[in-house]
Length: 474
Image (cartoon, rainbow, N blue to C red):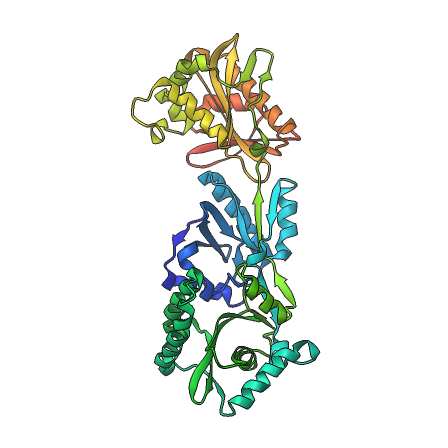
C-alpha cells in the first residue's frame, strides 16, 4: 500500500526530478508553486511506480494529484492510479483527483463509467503562451506590447536586463520592499500573502535552480521576473515592476523570454488569474495559445447511488434493515468478542465507552450506511434476527467486499451461505458490481465452507487470510 510522508515546504526540492520533465503544462507541478502555496495545501507525498503522488486536504476534502511519472511513462501513471484506488479502499476514504491534465480525462472517465463528476474551475486554469510570441511581440496583435517596450527603451536608454546573481540578493530584496510598500496599501490579503512567499523564495533561487532576471533603469532594479523550467515550458511565478516606469511589465516579460526560452523551451506558463477579472483581461490580452485546464475527477461508487437499504427474500431468510425492536439482539451479535475476532473489527475503536448502551451498536451501523461506508442487512429467519450480512470496502472499479456473521444459536444451518448468495445476487443485478470479494482468517475454516457454498471461488491467500471472489459471470 502507498506510504505517504509529510512534506515541509523546504523539502519540496525532493520533487524536482518529477517536475523538471513534466509535460502536463500544469503550473502546480513545479517547485515554486509547492513552496509558495504550501501553507494552503500542505501535501503529503508518496513515490510508487516511479511516479510522484501528492495528497492534500483542501476545503475539508482529500485530493490526490494525478500521478506524475519521472520519465513521462503514462502506463506507470495508470498503475499508480490503481494504487491510489486501493489506498482509498483500505483507508475508507473518498477518491478525488485534482490537477488532471486534459489528455488523461477521457481515460479516467472510461475507467469509472457514468458515475464520475468532472469539473474544470475557470479561475485556476493556467495561461500558456508560445515563447516566441513574447520574444518578438511580432505582428499587429502585439502592437500594444511592442509600443510599450519602445517607449520604455526611449525613456530609459541606459536600461539593462541581467541574469540574477546570488550577490544581488540584498538589492533584489530592497526592490521588493519598494514594490511592496505600494501593494500593502491596497489591503489585499492574497496579494500580501503572495509577497510574503516571494521574500521567502528569494534565498532559494539557487537551491531550486530558478531562472531570475532583473530589469534596471539608471542602474536601479525597476522590475524582476522569477521562473522555473518544467519540460518544454518555463513557468513564470513572480513578475514585479515599480509604478511610474511605463512599459516595465511588457519589457521585463520580453527580456525574460529572450533570456530563458528558445531551443526546446517552447512555452511560457504565466499561471492562473485566481478569478481576478482585471488580471484575466490582462492575461488574455497577451493572447494565450491555450488556457490549460486542471480537471477534478470524482468517481462515485455503487453504494453512493443507494438511498435506502433493500429488502431481500430467500427460501428461508429475509434480509432487511435491522428493526428498532431488535437493538438488544443486534448488540449481542455486534458486541460478541468471538464474532468480533473473526469479523476483524473491534467495536471498541469507535464506541463512546467500554460499555455502550445496546442501541449504540445499531445506531453506529446506520450511521455507516448514511455515510455510504457499508450496506448492512439483518438476517431474519421466521421473523427473528439471527445475524447480519454486509457489503463494505466499495471500490471504484465496481467491486465490494462481503461479510457475514451469525448469532451462536443460528450457526450450522446454512444461513450464512444463503445470505451471502442472496446479497451477491443483489450486488450484481441491482448495484451492477463486477466483483464481490471475501476473506476469512486461516483458523476460521467454517467461513470458507460457507463462502464456497455461496458460489464464491478461492483466489489466493497470505499469512493471515484466505481470499475469495465471485464475479457477475460466475
